[in-house]
Length: 405
Image (tube, rainbow, N blue to C red; front, side, top):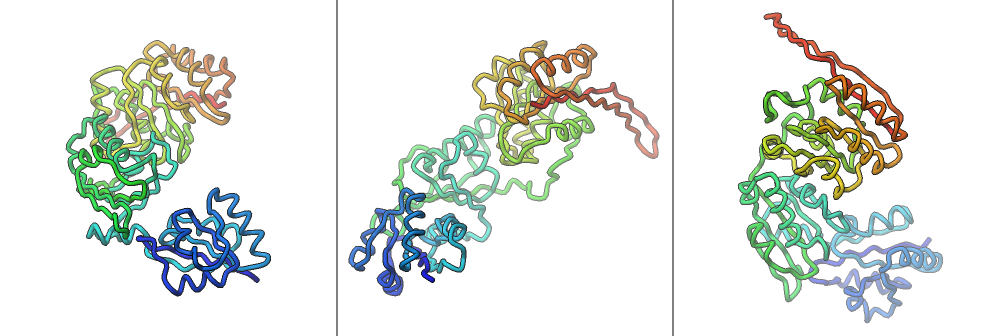
């Protein structure tokens, strides 16, 4: 049975004598334009690795008659084509010959240990979630691409920090960029976010970002208390109601949540912490509450929440379509918010409306039903008691109204 010989090419674009011998014994070799010169004198047919789907189809055909060599950068099993080849052809038909990964090579150049880094690939990633993916970690190694280049990444983090008034957080970062690693034109750059954002880099690069620890590693993931969250005049979704509301939202791992009439942002805040891949948009018009949301994001290290200043539904127009919508306050525009949100929801999407006053409790189910959503209603009556003091506190019942598309 013929095999795939998956060859790693070390930074600096070098292929050892042993690897060249293996390639020479194969019937053909699959390589990128950059790697063609490494095997040009091996006497075998060279097939382009791009587009990948076509290359995979060609490999499948040739394997019936010959061994096939595939050249890939660094360690092919580390964010490389190895995953695709193993899934398609099975481990019994793939022999792997790894080289140093660009992460190992770069960290050696940066003189930084890498056993404590988070690794993030930004290849083809949506710019909207760029900063959040990187800022979720104190030390992160990024595989960039031509669109999500180091200057773009640095600027995205600066913008995210500015959005929550966290200039001190931005100043904590040290950034390294390694270009054309191992080559004659190799360049290592170390700088601040501002310096990296203002620079330009070769297409072939990787980057490492490091900041002082946020100290949030062992912090509670879910269950923040009202006393911990910045809010104004007691206007905050109570702990028990927040927990029930998040349950009714049935949060997806990723996607988009609109927190409309966010107030202190407590619901969106906990949702963002529970689901780091979720993009949360907290929509609020009150300046004091906007300040509270930003303060809470800084305090709890939440970077996948974007603050949107303005009244709904007008301020919703430019946002990505939601998978979930929470309406904590409507400013008298409940009908318009529900109509706008329902039109943007995908099948299976949910709108959750919390109602304290009777008008909201009466109107919301009718408005949700009018938009063709399946409506369910829960009512929570909270009674708290401190023991052993036996101090009791009863709160007005809250209706949680859910519309599912």
